[in-house]
Length: 113
Image (cartoon, one colour):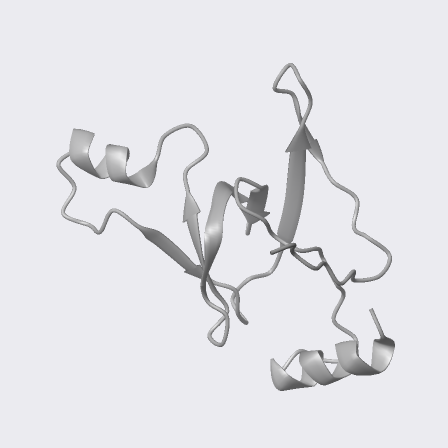
């Protein structure tokens, strides 16, 4: 990705120059925010940095139904000033989880269609 354009996007989202690129999140990625692990469903609101996630071993909607919880069936997290750590994980074919290394630079991905 062109560094000038990337810096423009960072400024637009109020990300400081010295902040480090962690990685892009895609559906079903496993991430840890402040030590709690989640499965990514998708971006809920890009302008407010909100993402929709699920618990790893049970869907939030199933958890709410089975435990008679009066919460919404959705888990929405805001990535903001209170977030002190974000890590991305991947699993091997046996289900072992490994912390993923950060990419050196952001990549621009285009979808077909």
